[in-house]
Amino acid sequence: MSLTPETLEGVVVVSPPEALKIQSEGGMLIAAFTHMTDWCMRRASGSVHITMDVPKDHKRPDFDLAQAEFDVEALPKDKDIPLVFYCADNL
Image (cartoon, rainbow, N blue to C red):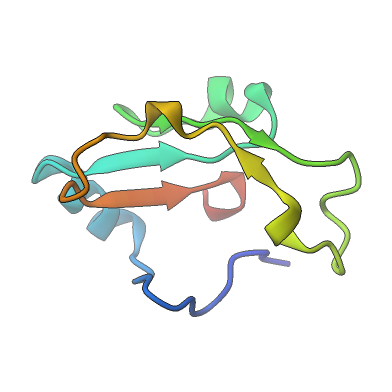
């Protein structure tokens, strides 16, 4: 079961090849993994990891993802840089 929404206001869902194209054109891949193990084993080359702080039961179907907190210090200050967020569920 995918936890990735099909649509989200202001967001464009892209395929992995499209994500790599965006990265090759100056965009940034952001890995939003909850576990460092996923980052170590499954990261895309050149991606940046942001820590997602969620409760241990975050995989419950009724979990409200709005409760998740992210360490966004690794994000670029330039707001014009395209960002592609992905998680272990997308790999």
